[in-house]
Amino acid sequence: MRTAILTISSSVAAGDNQDLSGEALAELARTAGGELVARDVVADDADAIESWLRRQVKDGVSVILTTGGTGFTADDVTPEATRAVIDRDAPGIAEAMRAESRRHTPMGILSRGVSGIAGRSLIVNFPGNPRAIRELFGVIEPVLGHAVGTLNREPGQPSGH
Image 1 (cartoon, rainbow, N blue to C red):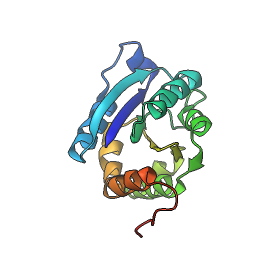
Image 2: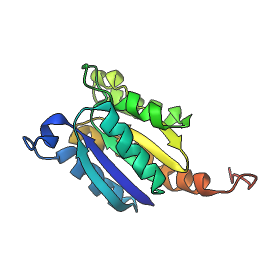
Image 3: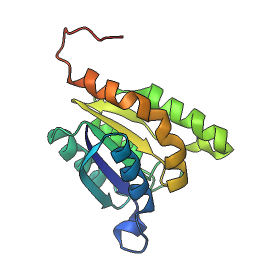
Image 4: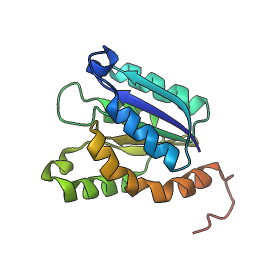
């Protein structure tokens, strides 16, 4: 699975902090069989996020994971940038992640992360916290291979489920 990871953080983009969330996501993606083909950091800017996501879709990346920018502050614009790129929602993924997050903290329901399909790419927004990433990655890991396989099937082929 060709995998790309984007960290959305103004402080990390400015060099003020380490990208711990992106590193946690990269490690988990590799363990799940992902071939990391891109990993970047951008500031909390909808145009920059959208542009980066569109490049990965155009490059044929199967799984695009973001971390950060899913909260309630005015500069948390990752969901909006993601929605501008996706063709179809995959709400079950985001719903399952919120449900799992809620098991760890009541604040889990405040995540605005989305998930969807752009071309043959699956895009999933994660919170910007390494602990939350470790808690939530197991929710999507079992379905990643099937999701990628389904997205790469030609129309009219049996779905297999």
